[in-house]
Image (tube, rainbow over all chains, first blue to last red; front, side, top):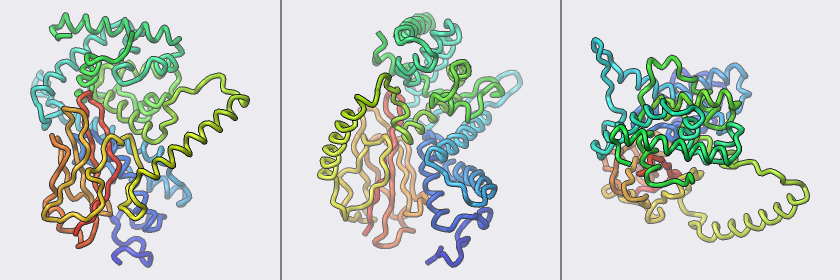
Length: 190
Length: 221
């Protein structure tokens, strides 16, 4: 057996050799974490999954050492840790993409390897149009529309901001109307 | 009226296609704060500030969506609105009814599931849409290792991650147009005869949503 209990550190990365966890526990934690990172990663970050897992493992190991190995990690804790590391990587990547050439900022598109570059390019153009229109919108309508576009239901929106359901519904309705009018003025077909 | 329409789906897809950071990124909320907002854990005033930023920053918008998906997978009940007016008087019959439903559904699920000696299938996430096709039962030849799964709506693109039983990646594929993929014998070289591979599919739906399958296990000859 390559990784047996007689030497629990064998087969691990050197940094993790003195982990307070046994080998099986370690493998199980790594597996759970990897599953969480895999779910968190957008498709364009798939290549970075191993790196992200490694970053989170280092963080978890620090936590374990501080607790002398007594700490247990819930699935939600791992999901949150995976989220944090993935967001860091998204931001790093986004900053890397943006390069300054004199006064001209060149931004590579987010999706370069999609199956339909034309559609993706049109979607990004529309996405920027939406951001611009949202910035001009009355504040409460803007909040309601942002949440709507991110998949929140009217009851959820109402609950978040302590609005009545009727008020939230009106704000989404009027906000979407504003948005469509603004996009039409920018030349985007409804 | 605020029901979803095709136009709304198009707007969502457009928003989801952005990941550029706003400005220098110095005013982006910390990842933990985005998580709290996405999972409904911030006070309204703080939540407004984060949501407002999410509307103008593609990078934080992606972070917000990811947090929401992850949290929903981990605690499906958390996204359900707390029902008001439930007291011990109506709780007892409700619990009894719920138990009955659970029992009936469990029997149905057990009846429909593969035999107990079939390959293990790990915890379901939100990817019930994606199932291995045909149900993974026999061993696949490594010279013709074609993984197939159920198709999503038209226009869905698929990502695939194939791993060994230690979760080491063996093969990855992105933007597959068809719900199938052939793993090459070279990719399977490290898997011993009679060994297994694990694989999961990510479907990128036309409306911009992402669905991840559970992990399937397939035995090799």
